[in-house]
Image (cartoon, rainbow over all chains, first blue to last red; front, top):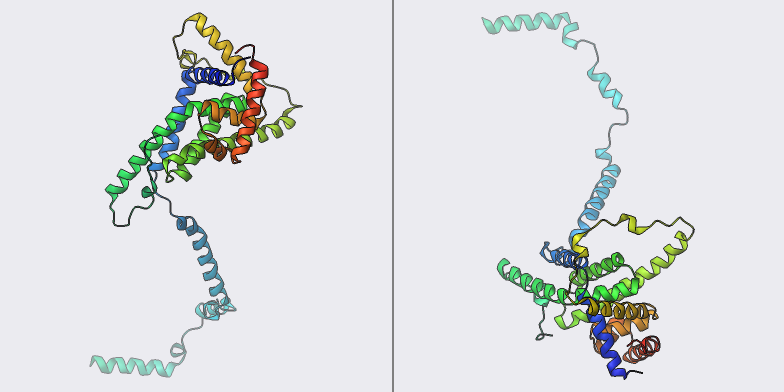
Length: 114
Length: 205
């Protein structure tokens, strides 16, 4: 039986040979892996608070929505059709119907021109 | 290992230190990491290969360990990188072994596909890396094959202790740190690994 120290040395030599004889494809992929890992250092620093920005924005929008929903001044009219009816009313203005007022306006206009 | 160097400054650059200083620190760290990783990557691959018995999985494990070391521990003192790297690698190998066990149970009843069908001829892969004589190469091939088979058959903790001590050259303290156990456990695992290997290889070696 081999002396323990010699045995350890022998196994070490064989393993080192095995490592030294790794094929080119494996060595190439290891180099690529190393470069990919090191490329992380060149990326701009990421600050911890940046990861909370989207969540914070979403929370702000939610709070704003709740506030606007609960504020009566920002509520839409209970019956939006009512305003529309007033605007679209086909009735003529009062002075058109009132013939006396119309004559008064024609006299007043003549006075101004003269 | 070179003189003790602390790279914490890379991440503690003063606010008014200027962009130039930060760039120089980053370059220093990058060079140191490149040197360190290029020193350990081939032996790390061999350790992963023996633990996982699959080249692609071994490469994935080594790349993951590199990524995690750079991501999380680049600012640590250089002297800590080696045990940290091997601890990350050991955890990665263990996780892959567990996933493989689960996957193996699921795949056991599915038809097996021959992986060699997917392999394309790669002239770089076929290139020999050393010009040893045919007889010497044959002898080495046999020795490597026998030893690697025996090491791969060791229980995981014994295998880990043996490879970290014997191949990577970590001392007992560093091995304990990399394995996440006491120095006494390392000595026990290493001793048993040697006994197992000697029993199998005594006549050959």
